[in-house]
Image 1 (cartoon, rainbow, N blue to C red):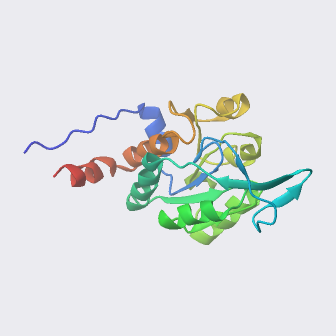
Image 2 (cartoon, helix red, strand yellow):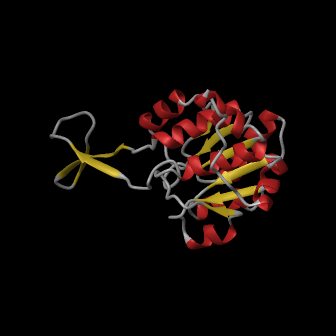
Image 3 (tube, rainbow, N blue to C red):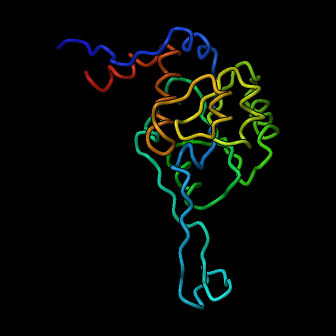
Length: 200
């Protein structure tokens, strides 16, 4: 059986910039998800409902995650790169998803993302030159300005895309995270070996 030759190709200058990355910070809404916020209504008296004027709104109860992104995050860990999450929101759904993916470094309900990133870097014994970040909106800019490699999904705000080292072809929640994971795995030199495990 012939060995599988990787079909992916990234610009050499991107791979050089990404070679030193050991930890990647990800935003959630608009990056790991499509950015949509889903609100539901429950009958009066339901403990999940938050009474509003004439309505029983439950708030954010659903998030849509992409399975390609999830597998990319698992592969990233096998390539020796630590995924971490910093998000301004918190939910049981998100925590369950991150647990299933084996992501242990996560900061929830964090609007000021720079100190959160710094605490994770300190815990891992790393510095900004070994970090990457993927974000889509203004709260992500302070971290994106400091990391060695910044990435934005195709649907990110224009200011974020202007600052990013790389903008993915895919939109957030629709394979953008996997695209970035693939780039980092190629840069690490582990992509071909991981692919071979699935094609042997």
